[in-house]
Image (cartoon, rainbow, N blue to C red):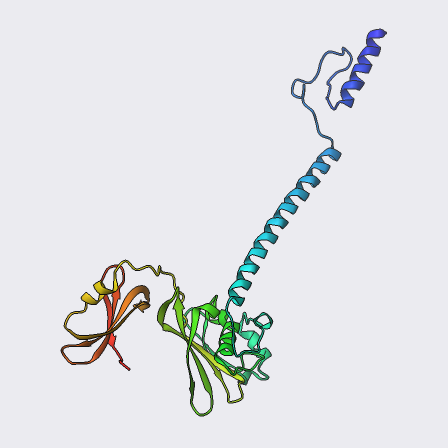
Length: 285
C-alpha cells in the first residue's frame, strides 16, 4: 500500500516537472527517448516566440531607422551645403521631380509638354514648364536643374554642375552649366535651363555623363605634352574626363597648334597610359 502511494506521489511529481513517464506502476521506469528531457508547454513557447519577435522587430526597426536617418542626413547635407546668392528660393521647399509624368502638374495640356528620351531611358531634352517657381538668376537656374536631376540620371546637380554663361536668343534665356567630377571637367556633360523673358521655365537640355572612373592621374601634364608631336604651340592643358567610343577615359586635354597646317587641335592623352585616344579640331578664343 505504501509502495503504491509512493509511486503515485512520484508520478504526480514527475508530471508536474514536465517529465513524461511511460509507467508509474513500478515507480522506476521512464521513456528512454524522453528521459531527462524537459518539454516546453505551448504557453511558454508562445511567450518566448513573442519575446524573440519583439526583440527582432525592435532591432530591425532601430537599424532601418538609423540607416534611413543617415541617408536622409547625407542627402540633406549634399543639397544644402551650397550657398546661394541672389536667390529667393528655399532649397528645402523645392519639389524634386521623380518621373516625367509629374511635369504635367505644371502644364495644363499634354500638348504643352514635349520631351525626348535617350537610349538609356532618361530625358535629355524637355520643352514645357518644369518648375512651380520662376528663374531670374544663375543660382535659381541651378536649383531648377536640381529639381529635375533624377530625370537625367544625376544624383547631385548642385555640386556636379558649374554655371558658365547665360545666352539669349531674343525670346528665351538659356542658363548654361558645365559638368565636373571631383573638380575635373567633363567636356561632353552640359546642361541648360530655359526660361521665357518673365522667368517662367520653358524646358531644359542635358547631356549629363555618369562618371564611373577614377579621377587620379599617374601621368604628369609635362609627360602628356611630350606625346604631342609636330606642334607649333601648346595653348593649354587640363585634366578632363573624356568619352571615346562609348568608354570613359581620364585624359589630359592638350590644345595645340599643329606645325603642318597652323590649325588648332584638341588632343586627349590617356592620363595613365600616355596613349593619344582622340584628336579633334580645336578652338582658340
